Image 1 (cartoon, one colour):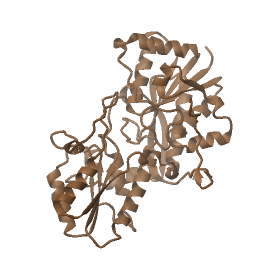
Image 2: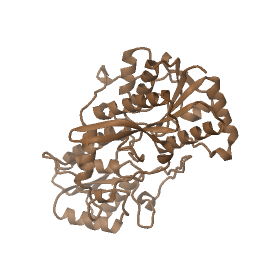
Image 3: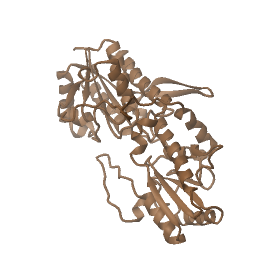
Image 4: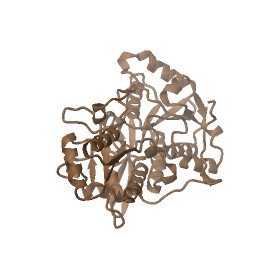
Length: 410
């Protein structure tokens, strides 16, 4: 078998996922890979043999640097759930037939929980059929909900954007001498790491947000309205950060309390949107004051103009570490980040059994949420702060960031 490798990207993109792709590509070439193939649109595209030779797209050092600084997924992504092996053995035979056709020795998948499930299943089937192909997971998710690893590449840059945008929203709310409430909706699904990042807006030049609600604790709508009323008696401008995934004590998502269009992906994940809009409308109806909702939405994960240098560097490192591990014979593993020290910040990479990571959701510790569930502790702020440090600005051409892209027809 030739020394060819293949890499794909899966799930929601981030501002630094392509830095991990660059790490895989460069390290594989440095270690002597004959070909570095890329799957267009993850495992779903792979099954259609939608595969490109990465060397035809990344020809120069400038291309590689542009790739690191280009947000979203260069290869395209998918949300495709592999069935259990017993349910569709023929599909797995097809996957390995394609891998053998392209003479693949190592398979790398950059993604979050669902992507690690793919690595787990493929590495398990490789054992069943005694295939020498190695399978490695490269962590990625702005939600920061992957188990074992200290944090995930993509989270730091999203947290930096959220903290910065929140600080600017707070300034904007102070312009007029009238009562006003702004509710910011932040991604994260069932984990509140990103919403907690709104707390970083507080500083010498900013009073910070007034309330923060994470999905780790039940959300009480009536209590929320009471707290807003108490705040309106004390100040004019109120800013609240809520997770898209907050639920009532009965387990119902808050956005489901109003009319909404429901979309569910192949992994059974509901599209969470409308929480802030519902709460802002409720506030206006109750208090008759100006109230607006702001959904940061995909801006949190595609803001390549405000990436954290720490984040983009670590994203590149985990890609390279995955390749080195595979070339050393490891399989069925994911690269993790291990924090050695917070002051000064020192973080290293290691490998960990993907079976202990896939399908396990890491949430914010309850003791990092303040009593009453309306804010986060300094521990969470201290945890996030090193991850947003420094910047790696885009390469600017004619006043705008220059990106590198795969030809649209592919």
